[in-house]
Length: 346
Image 1: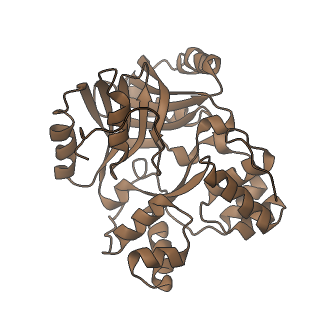
Image 2: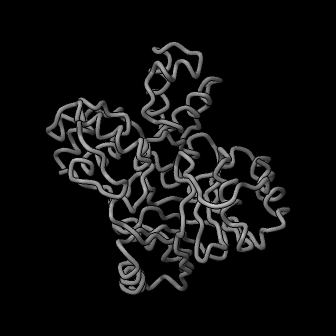
């Protein structure tokens, strides 16, 4: 039996497993083992160890555009005592993702998936503005995405040949970055799909028997619906993993004002940077939002002063370091400190 490792220490085999799961979050351990050149038992043991330590989790994520839903990026300014409990309350909502406490602990950023206009208005126009400890709020609609966290190159470890071997066993699907590509015809979910997607959001590698128990479907139906939703581009798999586990200790959100004529060019350039895990065009006084992940604060300084500064179409940049991530694509992370709040209606 392998000994446990500290959550922030990953060896080469762990990194290979992480990259393999980025390529295909539901790849059988037997296929991953063949690619990595180890036994299936070793791969399963490594995954269970990392998952139980809270380092790694595969989660099922929904492509909003394929369902006709709208995505928003929200910024909140709070009183110093309120940021963490409000962030925790936001993270408990099923329609929020990438909930971060920023800067000096008085600001929150998050992404919101609005299924209907009524859902959007209930949160953005009613619940949040009425919360006394929220001092200010901005909400920008995400119009077009150019890089998403599940494509972040910081997870890369395998060779091109190994990646190709994994992809050969992955179900074919359209470009899942719905804000970037034409979403095409909207997909309509069946009644049980909501329970299925909720279960996969908790554990993207849940077995068909477990998913069948949660949906009331047979295992064959679950298998068919999972494959259908994946091929339709509705269901994707993302890794919930802290960048610090990979040696990246400086993360920041950037809000940029870019000249309209250069907006697409700047977005494409940023999407090609290894430091960028997310970039999208938005509405609002700033028209581009990005998440940057660097090794340390010096690396972030160099990225801003060398790579971003070289982009002539960028007129202004606001940088907010991520102090704590409360929620990523799936599971809510534990928060230290006092309890929770009902500010967001939870």
